Amino acid sequence: MSQADLFQNLRKLGDPRTETISVVLTEHEIAEQKARSCELRNAQDALKRERADAMAAFKARAAALSSAEELCRQRASTGRSDLAVVVQDFITPGNEVLTVRIDTSDVVNRRTATADELQEEIFGGSA
Image 1 (spheres, helix red, strand yellow):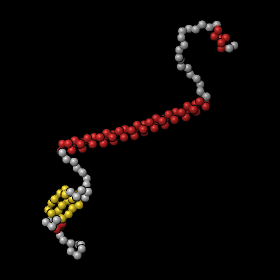
Image 2 (cartoon, one colour):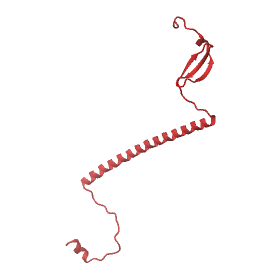
Image 3 (cartoon, helix red, strand yellow):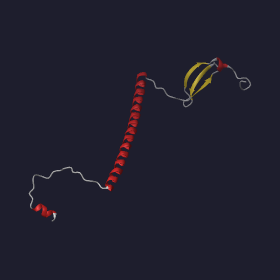
């Protein structure tokens, strides 16, 4: 008897609906599900690592922006900017020490020479 013959003498009741039924899996299907569950666990772990990396990058960007804002506010409130430049000290015949920027030759500081700076090297150096 075919399926069409089985339904020939029956009358439909209501509309089709979805139901959950239990099906016994084969050994092969069970092995596939175990392998898939391992793949999904690995994907979850990778997603957690990706989130942690993204959060670290986000926090670093936020800290950089905060530092930049703080520096700009400090410059705006003081009207000054601190720069790291290479300088060289020179002593003048008048015992004044001039601190000169190497890149622009501008004098950035003047002061009186210390006693050590005034000591003259004898015979090309100290003993």
